[in-house]
Image 1 (cartoon, rainbow, N blue to C red):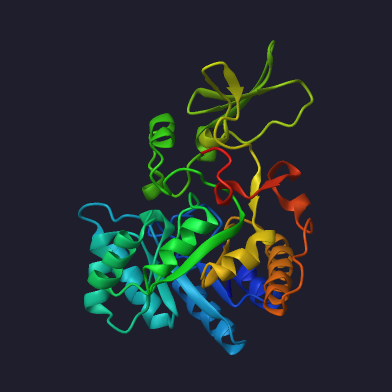
Image 2: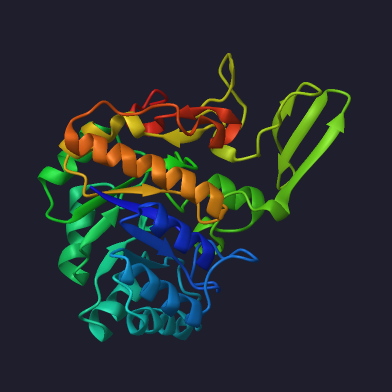
Length: 325
C-alpha cells in the first residue's frame, strides 16, 4: 500500500521523503489550501523545487487545493490547479464540484483525487465523481468501519485512501455544523474545526476551563492536563451520562489495522499532520514505512512506537471500531 505523508513546509517534505514516504501531500500558501496557517505551506517556487526533490528520489507529490472557492474569486483556485500541473504534481486533491469540472476540462492529463473534505462515503457518491470528472482516488472520511470500506471497494474501481494516524475527526469531514456554529468559521473554507484564534483557557474556582468560541468544552482539575477544545471530543451531558459522548481527546492510530485495511482493498494509507514539525514527520513516516513493509511480509504489526506523539499520549482506532455508534 502507498504511504501518503504530510508536509507543511519544504523542510518537512524533504524529511518525509528521506524517511521513506512513497508520496507527500502539501499545499500552496494561500486560501486554496485547507491548512492555510501562518508560517506553513509552499510558494510556487518552493512547490516546484519540492516536486523535483521528491521525483529525483522516487517519491510522488500531491497538491491539496481542497477548500471551496469563494463566489467571484474562483480564478485564484483555477491558477492553483494550473500551477500545480505546471510544477509536475502527480495529482491534485480537490473537493469542490465546480473546481473538479474545471480541472477535468482544462487539464485532462492531470490526475484528480477527491479530498476528504468532499465527505464521499458510499459507492454511489464515489462512482459519480469518477464518471463525471474522472476522479481516480477518494480519501475516505473517518466515519467508516473496515467492513464498510471493504464493501465500498467491492462496488467501485476508484482507489481508496484512508487515514491511519494523527488528528481524528468523527463528523462528516469538513462539514461540522457544531464547529461552524461555535466559531462562525466553516471548516471547508477555513481549514480547521477549532481555530486557535477562538480558543481560550482560564483558571476558575471550578477548575481549569477550555472554551471554543465562548462555549465551555472541557473543565479539568487544577494541575491536570487540559485537552485542546475540539467539539466532537468535548464533554457533554446526554441523558444521565456526562463525559466524552463521541470520542475522547486522543489521536488516531490504526497501525494494528493495516493488514485488515490491506485485505479490504485500500490503496493508500494517509498520515495527518501538515501543521507538524519535520521531526514529528520523520518519526511517524519511519514507523509507518516499517509497518507497511511488515504487512507486506505478513509479519505482526509493531505497536506503541508513536504513543508519545499522540494527543494526550493516548490513541484510538476511532470510527474503524465504531465504539460510539
